[in-house]
Length: 111
Image (cartoon, rainbow, N blue to C red; front, side, top):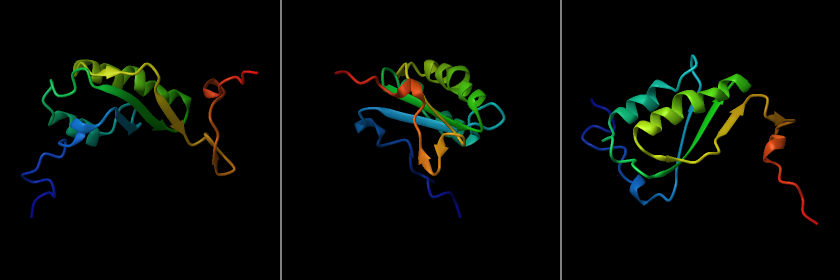
């Protein structure tokens, strides 16, 4: 009994996407192995010029460094157009069960 992707190409279908959103939980200061396995299947030219936003989750602020030191260089190899803003979430972000945006994302009101 094989994988449900046996004989299929699981990365097909993204061609119609306007923007790719790629993320990973932080595990031992790196992306998850499943993401790496998926990316290993891709032809390096498939993501060339594709707009891509990156996100990561982790236990704290230091885990947000995975985006700049792991994911952004990885997608640089694929020559993807990574958007300059990334998303990082930690277990400290929700307050009383509600997701609270960091102050840096709150736009000042214009009157």
